[in-house]
Each structure stands twice: as structure tokens, then as C-alpha cells.
Image 1: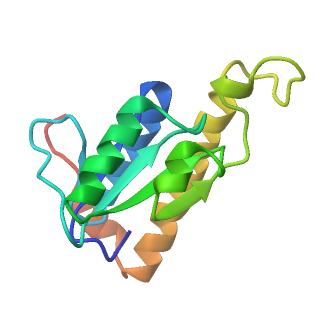
Image 2: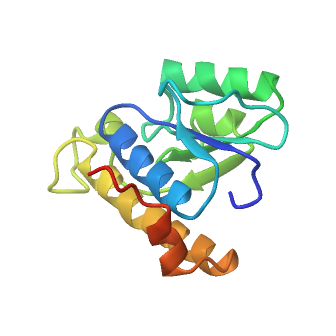
Image 3: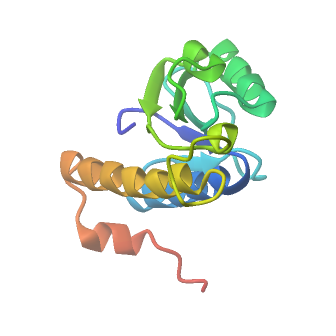
Length: 153
């Protein structure tokens, strides 16, 4: 992630909320990160990375965006609970979170949390650890991160 020229991120529903949180923290680290669908998201191409979330393994929007990014020369990364899913099969990089999603919340329960809550919560923790590791690897100070935080709140 830290080597990408630009990083575009996308997720649907509550997974999308976690992806937006990651985009914000990547921006705080000084990386050129944006959320797909925002009016200010630049095009992606060679040297860029598209990070998508597809907990259940696939969403039509995710697959479409991955196709566009790859056609433009960008690399793709999928965050999923289904490493053998369609999105993972098309991705350059796969981050697997072995947690219940809405696709497998019926029958024998693996979590007391409803639908995809376990996966979404695990995303939050994973993303915070990723940010911590990137912060260390890129030698970014807390002061630098704070300087990149908005003052329009």
C-alpha cells in the first residue's frame, strides 16, 4: 500500500464504512487515498492500487470496478472472508479475514453478532493494525498524521 502512487478504496454497505475509515487514515499518513464514488476521486492507472471489500466473496460493483482498474493498469487488492471467491480470484492481492459475513450467517452460527457484523468489526481492527505498520514503515510521526487531519469539524 505504501508504495502505490494513488490508492482508491471501495466497499458496499457497512463494509464500505470500514473502507472509508481506512481511506481517512491512509490520507492522515500522507498517502494519496480516495474513496471511489467521491467527486474528487482521480483516475487510477499504472502504479496505483484499488482496494475493495467483498466479504461474501463477490459484489457486481466490486467486480466491475476491479475490471476497470486492471484495464487501466492498476493493481487490485480485495479484503474478503472468501479467499476462493470470484473477487479474490481476480485480485492481485488478497487479505483474508476468516469471519462470518452476511453470505454465511444462516445455519450453524459462528458468531452471536448478526449478519456481517463480525467481518466488519474484524475489518476495523485489521485496518488499524495496517495503519500502525505503515506508520512505522514509512516513519510517519503522530504530529504529521495530526497535521493531515481536517480542521473543518
